[in-house]
Amino acid sequence: MNSLSARALRRTAEQWRLAGHHALVVSVDEIKGSTPRGTGTRMLVSGTKVDGTIGGGHLEWQAIDLARHALKESTQATAPWSRTFPLGPTLGQCCGGVVTLRFAPLNDDTLANWSLTPPRFHLELHGAGHVGQAIVRLLVDLDCTVRWIDERAEDASLPNAEQPGLPSPEMLAKLPPHIQWLDTEAAELEVLDAPTNACHLVLTHRHDLDLRIIDAVLRRGDFSFAGLIGSQTKRARFLHRLTEHGIPPQTLNRLTCPIGLPGVNGKEPAIIAIAVLAQLLQQTAPPHQD
Figure: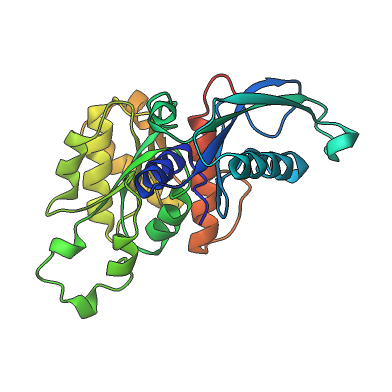
């Protein structure tokens, strides 16, 4: 499976290096005008494998072909080299820009100089039911960090047969390193360990637990996003209770409930997950994008 996030591709590159793969790192070194991907985007190419993407299309096909010809011509590491591609009729792409690609051997120096931009966001995801799992499936390929928190696995009063919807051991075993699973006895206390400016999504199996968690989030105040799953009715009830708990109006105004990008309709977990992540990406978009 291709590593579609920058951090996942970096880990794949380390694995290829440890395995001794003869490969090149193809990176977008410079762009002018409209292009499929921005500078710093990378792709790994060996004689039999390709991982990552520099934007697809004929540009990517040519880059792979050039890389593999270079790998065939030399079984030893070669010096880095560059090639410039106008994205016009010759490549069958209508972007209209110009891309300069850098071809570098996959070696220790290349890995040492492989810089990564900061994660787009850190997410504290409370709830591991169907919606939580749908969100996590989409987070696998995003450059972010996540703590996925649920306290049902620690609830001794609920036998396994009465814990429907929790992620399977197979799903948890396949979580990438940037998604940390955390079962806990008191989910609201985990809020204290969240980093500053984190995004918080609260979608647990109980309204009383949702209330305790979102209360803790709002009291911290140093969050980037505080989202609570639910209807307008749930929002009104929670606002009333949070007001009784002493949360000031200016803080309550920062609560997002219902969650999800407006206009994306549907109650299926996958649709909710898409709408919620689109909202998060909109809220946390970097100020400048290539």
